[in-house]
Length: 199
View 1 (cartoon, rainbow, N blue to C red):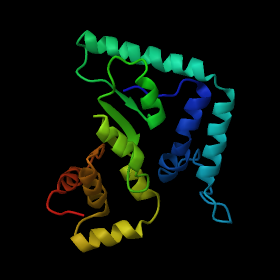
View 2 (view 1 turned 45 degrees about the vertical axis):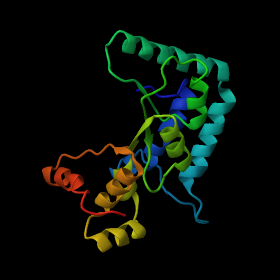
View 3 (view 1 turned 90 degrees about the vertical axis):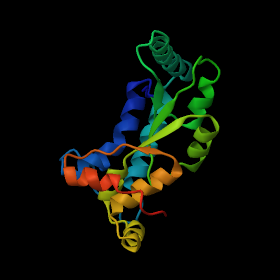
View 4 (view 1 turned 90 degrees about the horizontal axis):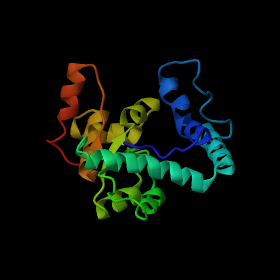
């Protein structure tokens, strides 16, 4: 999988959400707090927007495209050499997928993105279906653990399942593969029990 960041500034902007979510839930002193300002504004959105704008201001679009092209050409070469069966991208928005059509010999088989009920990405889901690109969603576990999700909890109670099972079933019905990680055999079994109900 190839990530679209082509500079340190772009990479730093792309990694910023981890300082709110993953590090926050693990109790790291690197986590950014508070999550919301006194007026209710999301600090994540404000800081992320500022970092993205800073990255845009300092980047050269042609140089960034050249980096993405070189990386993708290397993946196409690996595919042609039969060193892999499929090649894909990670965190590519529609704009970059459309850009690829101008120079890619092979379009991505898959796009791995943060996708869950809190970040549904309907336009990207539709685009991917229309263009034969499978979507793999990550972040559902972080989404559930960040804060209380009353709608998800109500749906889970209605079906007699867990919040995690509701999110996994939602992704399945959307046609999105889900990346789940767990070291608990019970949790792994629970994640597989999503075929007996529909949303």
